[in-house]
Length: 419
Image (cartoon, rainbow, N blue to C red; front, top):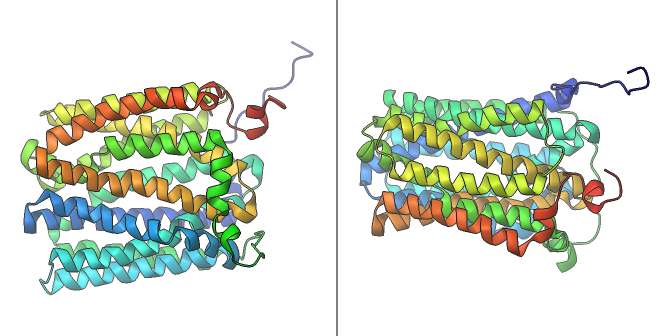
């Protein structure tokens, strides 16, 4: 019609029009890819050495505890000293950890206690890396391109989750030393990419360090109930429904797939997630954000339950793909809510708190799964967790009515000021 406004198609590559974002994207993908290689190789090698699910659970616990214990300073460090600097330094420390694990594997001293000690230091590096890297992206693109940037960054992590485990399984098939060497080289490349960025504009925290500045992230999240509901929903759903730590057991004893099969199982959630994020980039969520979030979490739990019961490789891989797909919708909604609503000066501390939620849901969830599997068996640990995740979605509908009623992702739209 002559008086109708022109429909402008979404620019699916808007974030990459900015050189700084492109370098950041490469660095973050490379770091995630290398970390997945290390995670896959370490998990498989520890299982080969011990055949004890408890040690698999400990891998997640020792990487989570540093983020929990250091939460008051990790985000503040990126707010006061610069996110690029903290992110790059963290990658360098992760590289050193990969080299240390390489040494243990090469010298045949791969004892679980030594490996867990190194992974604890790796957890310290990740504790500083996560809030810095998550917060930095906002400083690299204009606000109108941020949703697109979040979509691509999330897809990069998921793509690493596909390629990294497969590469880790294949490289470990050659030898553990080869796997850890490749991871260290890739991490070194990522550090170079980050430090090649020009210093981005950032509103640094200038207030003196006191209890108010230290607790700024907690205070903000507590005040914004929709954000609190979104991140706590993800926390408890993945904490109870996570099954990644038990994939070596499924690959070895349930499905009889071997180390390469483990890589395929680890990659399956990422495949589902990448397909989903491609759809979200092309067709962003414009409305019904709250209902979509709850439905996705419930379906995440259902897919996890199907995987837990399955003894067929094709069904297990398909179920894990749906696990990743439904989890990706939750991640996408939460990240946009969190980053666009948060003032820049406190963004690092808010993301540090968010990383605790993520760490508790992932690493602590791995500990939950490993401990429960050691006591009751892997199948019970996975299926019971999937059913519990469905229950969490139902409970959160009651506890957070504003999140259930939320239609839009942007704060102004949710507040009703302007659709």
